[in-house]
Image (cartoon, rainbow, N blue to C red):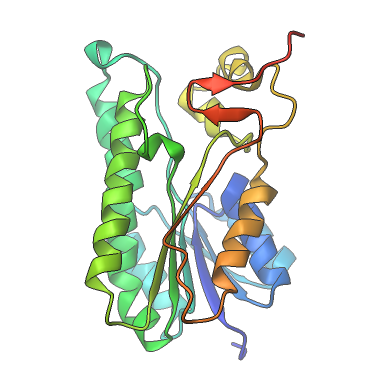
Length: 248
């Protein structure tokens, strides 16, 4: 244990979560890297001088173990674990996939936040929730994910109101198109062609490092400054349905 501020990052095994852990470590945080894939977070923790915890945020036992491993000091919680599963119209919805999305994106955020909140209050900490522009506007064939991310937005807004008199900041970061490791592949069950089509012709989608830099910036603001919500898209994406693509 050191005197460095402590950050807990969920979903830290790849993509935005792994990039965020690296950027926070560079900024001076001791990072507790949490994810289901223990081998990956162990390698990451070794790389950045942090700690690794195997944690599925939908498991009450895992969340309790993460809280115990984090200890009494938690200066920053980055609720990054989440994901999209499937891209069907509501009429063809895979309801099991919808349940999975609500469990990891919504219930998982609530469970980890609830469990770590006493330590965050004691440390006058910051809660960052990884939302999405899908939580701001609906789009076709994304009903389950859209609904889950709208619920995430509601959780953040409610939490902000409920903690107004506590020394804890609450922020949602809502990215648009991010070409991160695994997101589209997971959504399309490993179909490389469908995953690649999401980014086809887009010269510069956002990267995991772009979002990680924003998380670090939010966390480094003066304690009295709360960034309620930060929406970030690549320049090529004016809205969910309006993306500049170059013919290849």
